[in-house]
Amino acid sequence: MRKATLPALAGLLAPGLAAAQERTIDQIVNETVGAITAPFVNFIFAPLPGTSFPWIVLWLVVGATVFTIYFRFIQFRAFGHAIALVRGDYSNPKDAGEVSHFQALATALSGTVGLGNIAGVAVAVSIGGPGATFWMILAGLMGMASKFTECTLGVKYRNEYADGTVSGGPMYYITKGFSEQGRAMLGRVLAVLFAIFCILGSWGGGNMFQANQAHAQLVNITGGADSFLDGAGWIT
Image 1 (cartoon, rainbow, N blue to C red):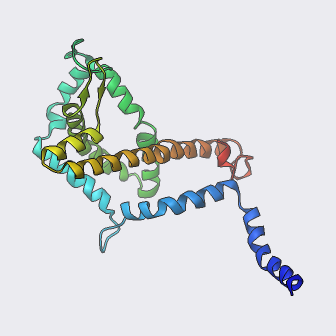
Image 2 (cartoon, helix red, strand yellow; image 1 turned 60 degrees about the vertical axis):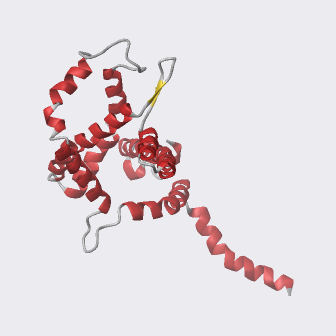
């Protein structure tokens, strides 16, 4: 009985094993990571009822609009002041901090140029056509008010230490801001979640996406579908 069962079991497993062997490392990685990220992606980019418009886009647009109106179009009124800050007109060696205004700007740009301003634009135009650039410009101008708000809160609630170093960011102003309103526990929970999602975002958007774009270009210049790198993204 046992001898008859083993061949039958092998016959049932053989197709699955053969299919697993035919899958490339890229496919295995994509399927594994995709299964983990799919619930988050489906939630974040879920469309509004009866539309194909993601709710997260509406959230960002509404937030940017509120900040723009509340601060009376600060991104336009204070643009000259921002240039003066970057030039160092208001720099004081005695102020707390570890980098200059220009170094802070360069650091911020290093995390956006490429992923958002180059690859992101290319993807948007390929999907939505040339008209997508107009909405990206408009969103960028409105988003400047959101960035102003984030930076202001980051400076206001940062920690300054005796040796001149500072620590700041959303984790700090979320914690301290909610604490001032008597909701310290909620602030701590949200701050921890933000930190976790930042780590995951830097791993996925900051590293995997850019590595994927670099691999796609290498495949194109080495023969496209006939390239020895095609289907071997794990190498890069």
